[in-house]
Structures are given as C-alpha cells and as structure tokens.
Length: 112
Length: 110
Image 1 (cartoon, rainbow over the protein chains, first blue to last red):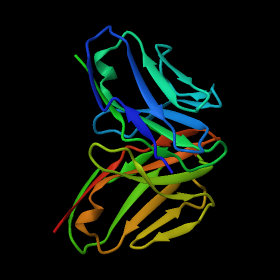
Image 2 (cartoon, rainbow over the protein chains, first blue to last red):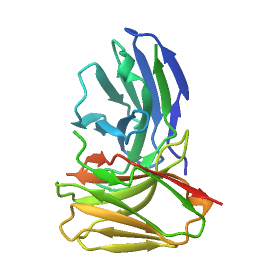
Image 3 (cartoon, rainbow over the protein chains, first blue to last red):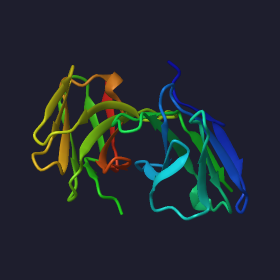
C-alpha cells in the first residue's frame, strides 16, 4: 500500500507569483483534503475534493484553488502569493465517508 | 477563529512522569481525533473517538471523549523520550471538515 506523497518538499517564491503543489493520495482513497499549517499553529482546513469535485471549503480566499484528477491525485494552486502564505501545506487522503485521514509529509512554502 | 483550544501549549517533563493534555471547545463534534506530528513530517493519526464518554487505550496513552462531545483529553503514563512531539486534536464538523486544535508541544527529557 502506497502512502500519501507530496511534491515538491520545499519551495521558495516571491510575492505576487503563483504556485502549484501536488499530492498523490493513498491507494484506494478517493478523497483529498488540503491544510495550511503556519509555524507554531495547528493545520487550517483549506478545502476537500471527492471524486474530482470540491466537497467543502474553509475560510480561504478564491486565489486558493484546487483540482482532483481521475486517479484521485490532487493539486493546490495559489495565485498572487502573499508573505502570509508562507507555511507548511499538508494534504491528507481518506476513503469517502471514512473518518481516518492520512497525511503526507507536506510542502514547505516560503514567500519572500 | 480557533474553535479548539489545547492546554498546555508547551510541556517539558522528565522521563517516567505522567502527563495530561486537554482539548476544549464550545462546539459539538461528530468525532475527535488525536495526532502526533514530528518536525518536517505530517501529522500521524493516533486515535479516533466517536461516542460521548468513550475511553480508548493505546499502550501508555489513554484518550477520553467528553460526554457532550465537546472536549477530550490525552493522558500519557510513564512518558518516554520517544513521546516527544507536537500533539494535535482535531474535531470533525460534518463529514468532511476537521478543525484542528492549537497544539501541545511535548518534550520528554531522558
């Protein structure tokens, strides 16, 4: 069974740029959630995708968008990067309707 | 707005001591999870509690879900250096949204 993987591991961008982060879900899981974890804080829910459709969204502006592909992998896109977007971005996969979510190692984004 | 408050925020104890971490909210959750996160890694699920008043044991870790499903506690007996990490609780709102707590950073000294 393959675990959740994310790429890239680290990324440095400048303010105003755009970024795409990628996540491969665990084998057999059709649901992916994305979280933002600022330094010293707990993860904040961004949104969730289930079978290629957005299934719920947290309090994040529209410049945070996502996609899920037929193989259930997912992308998180952030436009017009701001300094406060610097954080660890985590994706978690779970089987639809299930409670247990499994996290990837995260992508550390630094915005200068 | 952070709906789940954890206490204490930081805890440094000697190996062999016992400790309790609390997770409190004014909201009701359909289930609650506890995770441990180590530097540079994603959170790892420890347990899920679903029923009010439920108690689950995982070796030296005991988890309790409050009767009203608004709060939870994690008790560690005879802490070891390997228990060091960031402990996070997360409450489920509906079927898809998990609200994470503020986290408790535990350091166990040998």
